Structure formats: C-alpha cells, structure tokens
Image 1 (cartoon, helix red, strand yellow):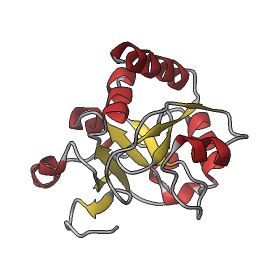
Image 2 (tube, one colour):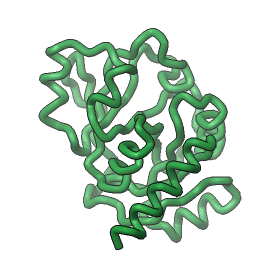
Image 3 (cartoon, rainbow, N blue to C red):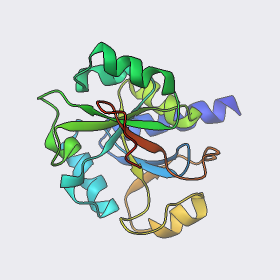
Length: 185
C-alpha cells in the first residue's frame, strides 16, 4: 500500500509541475489544486470551478515554512495560528506585495492552511510548495465527498485525480481572520 500511495503522489507531482490541475482528498471534501505560481494553471482551475477571480483562493501547505514567502507574518500572527496547525483551520493573513492577484483576488490577504490530511500534506511536501486548494465542486453546487461523484461532476475536465479517503471533518474547514481572530466561516 505504501508503494501505491507513493507512486500516486509522485505521479500527481509530475502533473502539477507540468501545469495540470489535480483533484485530491482533503480534510472534508475533494479539492482542486494546482501550482499557485502558474497563472495558466490557476486560470484553468478557476474555469473548471466556475469561480470568479476576485474571490481569491486558499493555499494549503505541509508546513508554515512553505507559506512564509507568501505572507506578512509577525509574532502575534504566528502565535495565533501555530496552535491550530497542522489541522483543519484556514487563516486569512496579510499577503506579501508580490503575491499575484489570481491568488488574492480583490484582497490584500491570502487564505492559508497547513493541512493534516496525509495525501494533501504529502502532495505539498513532495511538490516542495503550497498548492492552490478549493473544493472540487463547481461554484454554488454541493461539495464532493467521494470519487464517483467527482468523476461524474468533472467528467469533461482535464484533471488528474488522486483517489483516496477524505478526512473525518463533516463540513469544510473553518476560516478565521489572523489579525482579529474573528471566525469568518
């Protein structure tokens, strides 16, 4: 089983490096992901998702260190977010000025999470970078929790699917503002 999982992750990483969009299990749902610095990949993901660019996207990572280059972090923010990671908590954190608008949308911040889902975490670790992560369902459609529904819903999309079990979370991850600590979702 370990060989199969390792092969699956390595194959997905090759697809990511080639600019593909992938689907993979997360803490609560199947997600769509891609290289956050590949504009064409992100635009393809937004098209598949039918999501407007101005909403912004979430980045997931295997560690805070992977996210640091994207964020304006201070000690207070680090102390607020660190106890929740790795875990199913997404934080809105001020973004560095260089972060592309295809990630931040109409915002000066970025939604980020250090995931504890083993497949998502391994994807980020082996890719060596955070990944864009958004639920795999088209906008305004219900979240996708199993691979059969994923295959049916995204049948015409050019994506690589990493099959696996989603986590035990009943609903999508909570989102908090890292400055105020206020829960947003």
